[in-house]
Image 1 (cartoon, rainbow, N blue to C red):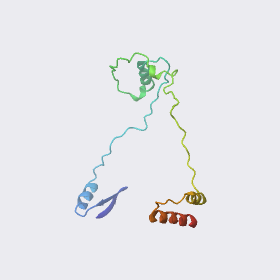
Image 2 (image 1 turned 90 degrees about the vertical axis):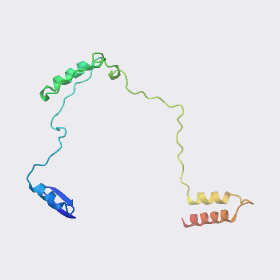
Image 3 (image 1 turned 120 degrees about the vertical axis):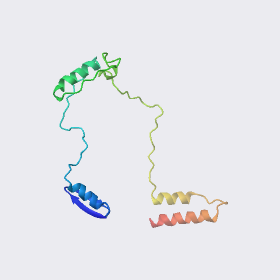
Image 4 (image 1 turned 135 degrees about the horizontal axis):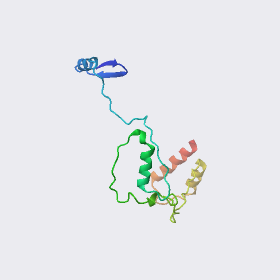
Length: 147
């Protein structure tokens, strides 16, 4: 692999492709950049008023941004000249409802080593307890004792 730098870019290519890349970069052809949105163009937006139609809002937007030379669009929307009820600021867009089934989560308390030891000692030995159960209990007691 060969590394070389051209202007501000660093290239990492195989030896077989290095001459091709170097010839392309040295040919002097301008690099192609993808054209993104022009960040310098600022748009102004009108204030929405109650009972304003979409047509009125769009016409105010076009009037405010006349210097940008926006493309004219013809609208076929059936409600274009009617007020937009869902954008009426007198009605809230979201209403909060209290969930009747909500239950406050219970925060569990972390057990201290002494609490765990008390729990183990409170358990009465079972007549059917196996040796494995007893070894697990002894291991738990040792772990608690270490701290």
